[in-house]
Image 1 (cartoon, rainbow, N blue to C red):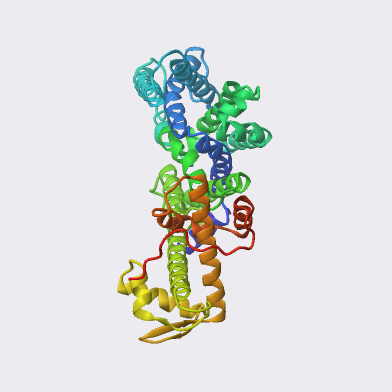
Image 2: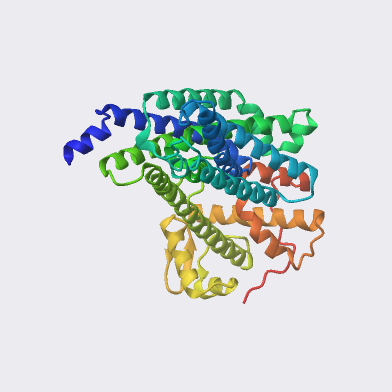
Length: 439
């Protein structure tokens, strides 16, 4: 068993090498063009294209058999699938542009009609005299293990061409993905660029038929790009990551299928890609659930700490005499805002950890030097934003405190300077525009 795993993972066997390299190249091209397909919000388009290729496979087989050639010639079958897929795409674009039907209706119509037509055609060619159509149905679910060197060369050449074209059209594709209205206003041929993008998707779909099948190729197009989206906000990195995830899924999926011989490679490749997607969804640095939850917790802790410091500062302002950093009664501080006892104690603990409190007893607290400075800064930012809302948003002073509460925590130094200039009081620490309650 160990020898089998070593041979498969290190590509020592010729057939394994052909299959693994083929699906890795397919994964790279799927990831690259899938990134644009995802950002263009045309994910289901790949599903439509893949199903629309089925009639072409059957008709190509029938045509080649009728002309006396081998009906199972892969280039001929792929040519038929390409023509059929292109016709499906054109029909869908015609429905969208000439009727008021929505995109999902047009895609559902083309997908179901072409797939039904393909099943009917495959049924007919099975009964052709002198024809051996056994194995054609493998294009539905994929048959990776049957690939030979010529297949790998064809997939590799097309995959390389698709990747190069996608990179060459990167600027144009990016423009129509993010703002096709602006692209049209600037004179870019949006429809033509859409057709070019979908033509590349068609090519990936067709060359992926033998590897993962027409039903699962959509997963190979979408999952690597979607997984990459969780890790970065930059398109360049997303394309690179999608290509790497596609290649990794192909390598591991084909290897597992080779090690455990009874497992279909197409399905295993998709399952590996789905596993990477789930890991990315939870731990992706840019959009993953865990990093987002950590960010929310950090923000909540920071907001609570800032509310605590501002409450302490406002209580100090109400003390008789010049403003000074003196001990604040703990109960007065608790009653200054509507927070639970548990939240209040947690915020005090965080403030102590961050060295904003010098002493914290059961009766009173004393701000540290850094805590007093931070409290003054937060109170000043809060009042600057209150004044801005009162003057420019026409919010009543009695309601402005709540609105300012939601924004003051994201005011950066540059925004504070702009507020000072806008309000005409740089460096001035204004008093509160409303009455501060002291419960």
